[in-house]
Length: 207
Image (cartoon, rainbow, N blue to C red; front, side):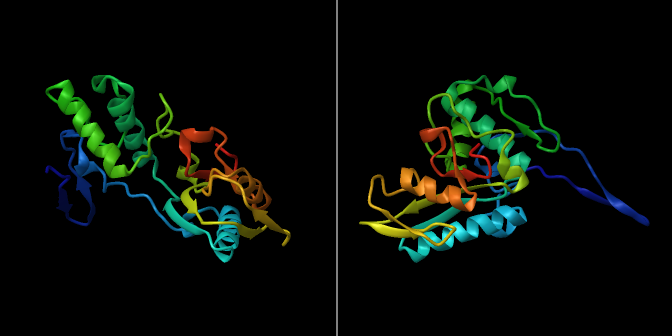
């Protein structure tokens, strides 16, 4: 793997030497890492999410956070890897992004698609709705979104922000539950308005 080289200069900040673009593939997945704790959310949204999460866990639900803050560079890689692997986008037509020295077009289209799929798998991108890719301009990049899975068994009783308790006795027993969405709203945690297109996604706006 080729990497940037730091060249020390007397009494100066080390200079970064430009390198040639590196072919796409799973090697890119650990780069520009996302965060998986609420500590990286904006202060107000952190309070909202922590309150909602605490109410869910107190009721017996299992909450697993996948992503909170996601750098724009990672959003770029997730978006275009998905577009190539699952939406048939031409890898030679992917626009460049400053600071991400990646080459999407391999010697063959098959290799390009395989490498993009390896990235999709590595990013653990769920099967999104047809023609839907992870957003380029995502609220994750400003700490106002969270991807989390929520599951439980049987009937649970979840407290809203005002302390009143809701009996959640409907299906599905996941974050897609309509009752759960209404409870989340009371905390200021809004389920993604696109429905099944992005099941784990919650944010300040629902986008």
